[in-house]
Image (cartoon, rainbow, N blue to C red; front, side, top):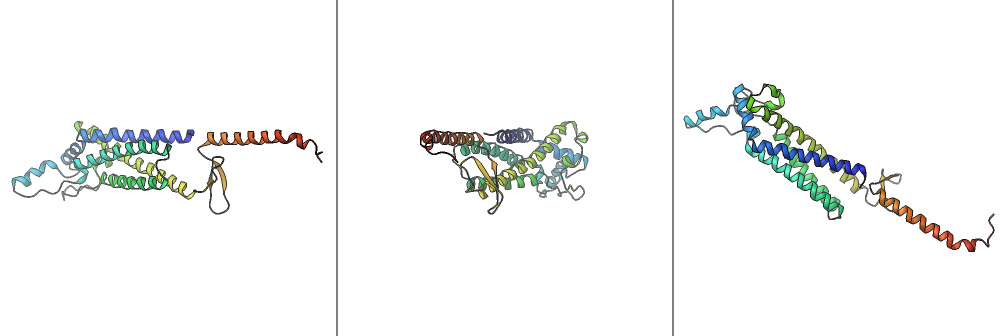
Length: 242
């Protein structure tokens, strides 16, 4: 494995692990409810405490905005777990050639679409209170220093989760681009571990990731040619060079 590939693998592992830790904290700490209560008390969004008046007057309260639901916390945690599992399985399966490029591209495209949806939900609006409408959650638009003491951790963690989601979307988009490039380069010269770059009949050769294997192949080819020259040298001695 080349150093570049190893660095990418470590970066992806750290990113997915960080997302798993953050979204676990969001789910276990019920941080969305704490942020909702904080925002409602400050007038930044709808106030969950006022929902009791609907029940007292036998009225149906408005639907809880998705941004404050525990279901969204479950979804983000589930996506973090799925990402960690996929990266682990893919690293093992690709090493042993158990997964084709087409299957990898299909799976990662599906995961990317899920992450895009989850990321958009994390910055969705709260329009259930006409007097305190919120186009974006307050923890993304206001400083966490303005939060209540019990909601400061919720603010920082929810904000970190949103930015980690954006980074994971970019990560998977990069993986998709690499998969598409690899598919478009099918049939490239592999004898010496090179990859084909460019299109059409004009292209140049770049050293691929299997540099060690390429070096071994070149060494074996040079040894074979050297042995062949040594074998026919007595015959060539009878023919004077010009």
